[in-house]
Length: 128
Image 1 (cartoon, rainbow, N blue to C red):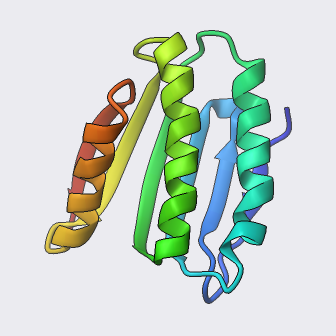
Image 2: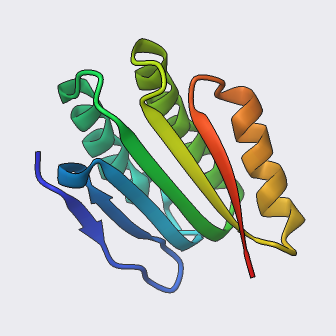
């Protein structure tokens, strides 16, 4: 499976899914005009990759500083895919949740993710 890189724009995040290294990173801000269209190929690519894996470790680095409600719904879809993989392969998905130490909203959303997707190992990482 080939890696997936999409450079950030003014309203879309950087997507750096290095499937070859089992490391997925999303960073920046996500408020695309058409979030479904932007994220559809990313979700499809992730699903395809997860279907080809068998008990392999996967690290997801979440570094978004802002995302809108449409992006939130799509991110939930992404976490559902990861959670399902982790359910079938316990202790195989680590979610590193990077957040500004003063940004309670991003941290709170991360803690909600931790609560909702219990098969994913969660690590909150405060940055200054």
